[in-house]
Image (cartoon, rainbow, N blue to C red; front, top):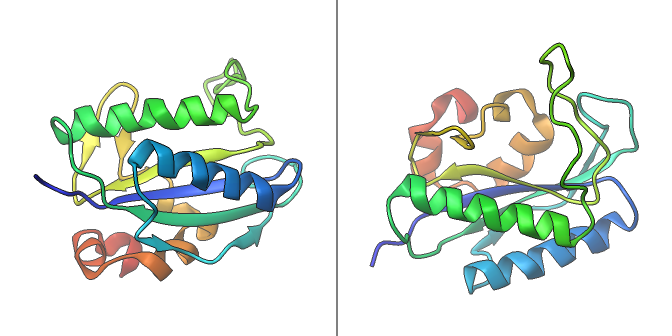
Length: 161
């Protein structure tokens, strides 16, 4: 039985943001079958990549048993996160890219990002881990530093250096 450190970033800028984060954590607890091992403080930040209301953000560390290969398990978790987002009211059909190919960002009831899956580097059609934009997002880096273990900091010095 192999346990893996799964780091998540959560954000909300619509409705009752605190309640949205709490509801997402409760739903994630059901997915993982456990409570997070570590929970960061909640930080407020301006919308990133678009004009919108401020976000509340936080990071979580879960330690589930790895089921399948890292890529298989991480992808299964990604699908579960998307189901939570949809169940909480995030539109599944919001466009991700503009016609010119640039990434579009939107207001969100909840956003759940898989930041790290252990020390793995995963690159598939639907998933890139570590999350490729961590280094550009202080609203992720600040709470992530609070909960990150030395093994993660040592494996990814470009973020934690």
